[in-house]
Image (cartoon, rainbow, N blue to C red; front, side, top):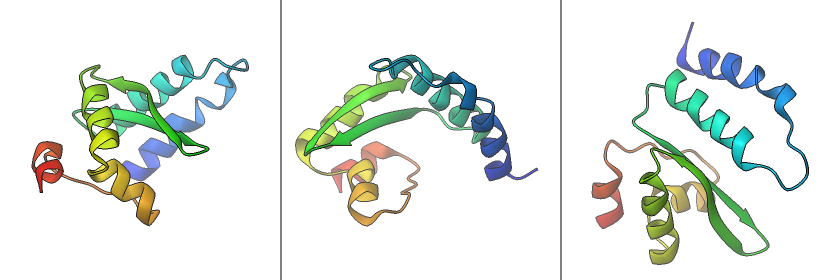
Length: 100
């Protein structure tokens, strides 16, 4: 089974976890845990963008939230590149990409 098939399978199991209004953190944390495991990632974060505001909803490990917030404040980094271009951005080391 490919990585993408593993991820789809993992995320499909989360469909029944639709949150109560206003409670996205726990279901999204489960999504990033599944994505991190399925894709063998060192970490994952969810950055929510709506109405011109963006903020980190959840991250694992927790220190990754600081990296995502740093990208938002500096307006540079792979998360913002992905948003701007509408395509995933994979980097081996976000610290190297962020400083470029």
